Image (cartoon, rainbow over all chains, first blue to last red):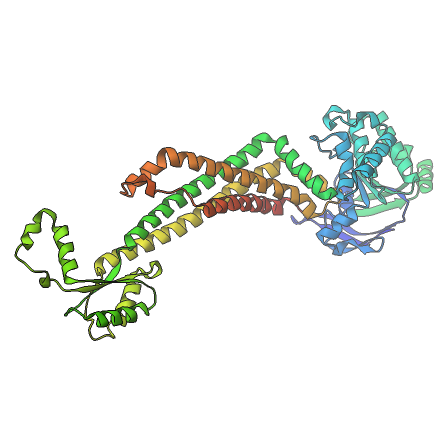
Length: 231
Length: 297
């Protein structure tokens, strides 16, 4: 369970990004965070993975209050979180295998475990035959699948994705979204920041809409469908 | 064990991956340490030379009368008990006359018809190296004055003042220039390593995102810096050795007006080890400083 209590964020330059945000995300949920550019979607995600500290309020992840964590404990917390970004954030000098193996190496997994787990997860995203390729030799969709494989290799409890389909064409975006759905079905909580309305309609889930750093709506799929019918 | 293997692999891989940046760092360390090694070499040789000069520092007590053997032995025993005494030598009137005769060389005939008794017998007291200074000699003279038989002393006051001033200047210059060189080296090395870390800032960010602790992220970079530091230090010593044999040995001998180039020595083994340790520390600290800025979780 992720809980935010009256969370506000003002950046050092004085720019306010979030105001008094409170919400609860139960384990195993699938949530979209949407809104126009500058609404605070990425800031919300950054607060969740402790890249930023809130200016006010508290964030609880499970039983841990993340606003009070030190660097070492933030690192340990992130081992339970998978990340997927619009720009993939892969290491271009390393092979697909090495990129996906990285989180396991950080956790000091054995070589045997790394080989087995990396192969399994690459099979899961359909890239097991491109183990030794470098990211720049792959298409955008394949690179995003490598990023998903890297996020999934440690069986995270939470998957955060920031505009994961932003750089992909329609068919690839659908493929990636289907992959997120499958991941969620296996019990992982998925939070996706996106402004891709087509994907929101095609794969309806709980949707939190942000505007100027405030939550303007937080609706379940049925409510969204009803409101669309009403329109 | 897995971590150690990972760190070793990452360190070696990173150096192989960016040969240009790696060479730049090693080259910077090598040049900076070669300057330092050169400077140390010169200072040490000057110090060695002044140590030879300082052997001439002694206190001469001119004696009014020729002492009996018993009296002489009593004085010797008394003086040997003073601190920092290296040797007490008795110079008889005959020995003093012979020495004077020899020093006059071609003009020795000036002494014709004169007897050795015109010169006083003397005690030549040399000090241990640690006490070869104006302070040391004055302390000794104060002690010698306790003996009523000793009242005529010579110890080359003017020469001692100059010697003390020179040693002070040498030490001051050595400390200041050495300290400055070390800081300049650290600054240059740190900035060069900062460039290599900046080129890999994406890697640092990604490592942080996937749950690497700050130490896990920093360790391969620090190990890389230390390896490059040691490699640079070895290169510096090698280069310094070559230059020493081909240029510096003769050049220094001429500069220090030492006739024999054999009196000019390369850095002692402990100094060479010190340069290698310094290279290691420079690489290590040079990596640590920029990492503190770039690795933020």
